[in-house]
Image 1 (tube, each protein chain N blue to C red):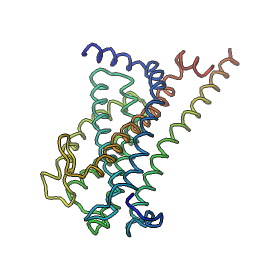
Image 2 (image 1 turned 135 degrees about the vertical axis):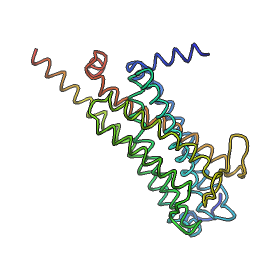
Image 3 (image 1 turned 30 degrees about the vertical axis):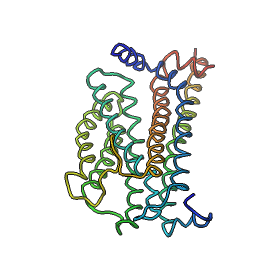
Image 4 (image 1 turned 180 degrees about the vertical axis):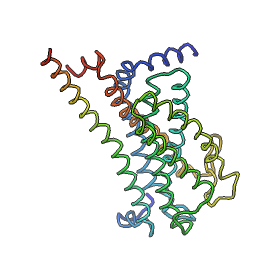
Length: 247
Length: 59
């Protein structure tokens, strides 16, 4: 098991192997996205019953929750890539970390906007400065900070090391977001689903799980598309890219 | 099916503007994230092709 992980780590550390392998994986990941997200959303929008308290506004959940999950998961991934950059100086990790930032920022933004739109009919306000909402806003600012730092430093290797430090330090915000609803009194409701239990009816829960898993596939597709471009840009002097383009 | 008619579905029981604006914004942002790398890849491939051609001419 450990040997396999080690081998995969070294193989995917090679930009050429990464480019070729992800090219083969892409159609499957796209299929996974389409097969989960589209039925999940149709189920959630059309067939799931309305909520007995919130009516139909709760259907925003089917994009709000996956976006929140991805914004946080993406950040953790960026911080892990940052550790690999600092410790093992892996070029591929630099590229992945750089490409996660705008995608993660998109989902953090989506989470905040859909949350605000959901808050208006449910709480009577677009925004409150409670712990969950504020820490999520800080996550968006962290992503924007990483993107700005990446653009400000010309040398990609120096930029990757600087942003790695920022993203690792910023990772303290992730448990704060997760536990904010338990540590403080928030307007935001606590989690309805955990790994082991759920307080949600199955006809609402199953489409939500489909959307969450589907959005993870979507995230993989978006990240692979962006990182493949980054590989082409950085490796354009290498023989294999020239051969690939020349064909 | 949670709705009787198509109009009911669009209205979302008075929550239509909220639900549909949330889904609309999401669609726009996700599409932007799909289109951006496609455009970048096209531009990169053209640029690299041009560079290869120029080097061939120079040598």
